[in-house]
Length: 208
Image 1 (spheres, one colour):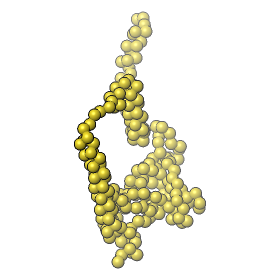
Image 2: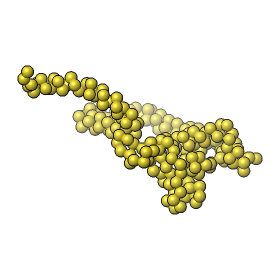
Image 3: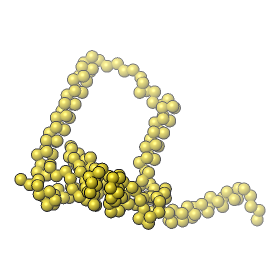
């Protein structure tokens, strides 16, 4: 049997299917971690590439076309925009006042995962979560590491976060998850302590 280039290509295309399935089976967890970490960046870059392609292809030229509006429409638009803006600011102000009037509004610091956390409240809820050293009150930096001690890479990314004090050298416990995941866990723990009123045990000085 003579092996021609065409036959070799056919065999390669046939063998590529089971090989691809086997590769996916043995590396699916690594790829899942990779996509979880880089998916947003990849989609953002893809979206920018599509917009640039459309613009260079002339498909977005209609955005630069001039339009003719009647005077009454321009007057209505000039009145409508500031009115909507004032109503939105009013709604935000009322929401902020609602947060301030809550009994737990002064609960803005606690210890979680061996770190002293500080935060604020705004219209979206808990925000500006920041970690400080429980020893010297220095703002902490973080390091994303692997539990097995090996350096992270593309296919074996970090699976835990450690908070480090640059002043006294204190290190927190290893918290599973990326830094963004850890902040989400801290936010949910704060929310849980508020809902269960556990915060009153942590901060009795806030009780009236």
